[in-house]
Image (cartoon, rainbow, N blue to C red):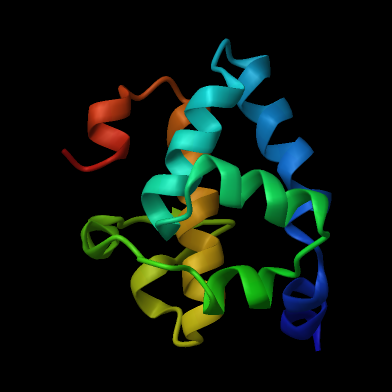
Length: 116
């Protein structure tokens, strides 16, 4: 099943794609990291360690120290799938991250992306 392949992927395999998408639109690594840390509750040091350890998405999501409660305000679609229709909790968290990176690449202000 495709979902399980995503779970087994390391975050560090996808992270360069997040950076590439953001940087192509003039955004920064710092902004990408801020979004990831805001969403999950990881510190920058923890994020760096997880990336270097090839942590899988499943572990990354399940062990998030403090998932941001404001993430429930993230709405819309990613890859043609509405976020409110995703039932799998891990896939929903992955798609939240995808959506935030999309918003960053589209030029949204960080305050709006972080639902401040």
